[in-house]
Length: 275
Figure 1 (cartoon, rainbow, N blue to C red):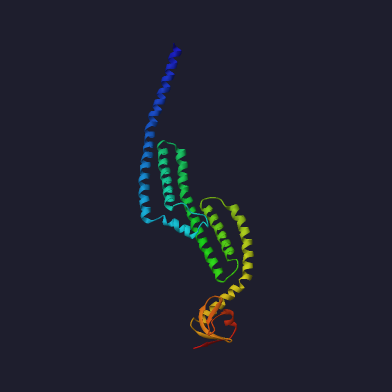
Figure 2: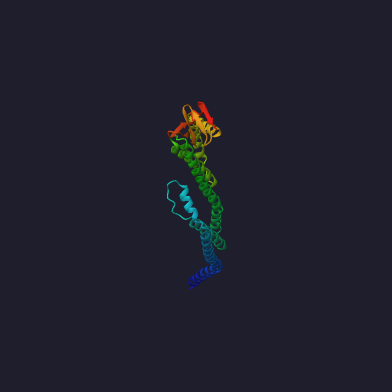
């Protein structure tokens, strides 16, 4: 009989302890659920308002500009900027309310880890923004270099512009990774050696190959400074009116028709200007 009474006491104490613990936890659990429910409602309202604001501000037009600028090369951009921003905001708000819920439940370890993630997100976001802006600048420089070389009819304009683009993209990528808190020491050390050797070889080759380009620039500057469209000039036996001047030649309108004269001849030969 005594054994039965002991069992009764054990069962009673067990259920009593369970009831006490549940009574202690239940208010916190209800509070955590209410916080999550409130957070869900606030998030829904916030996202709805932001959708309206983005629609009025025409934020999605930036997507079309990204496609036109070819920041990602020939890769097709199929996402909308507004959806990316709204998804990011929704994720942040979810983590914030989840952290508060875990704090109410006294789950310190979980809430601290989520807090660390929240503190890291701005750093990650700034790294992504830096990467995007860097690619845009690299693409702009690529087009500028391609246009510059093409204006002088130089071979390899496309190859050189793409090469410069990839070099800038690599530098921007490493910078963005550093901004995100990723250690890139090994990558940086190896790339510094490779890029240094490559740029030295490129500079030497470009120095020898750009002599004609610089000469053409000087000739063009000379001709545009001393001659103008509409003037009547005489070069050797050719006499006519200047119709156009570009970086490599001058077009004369003569009695027999149009004559194209290289700018170099205007510098090397005697030119008579008629009033």
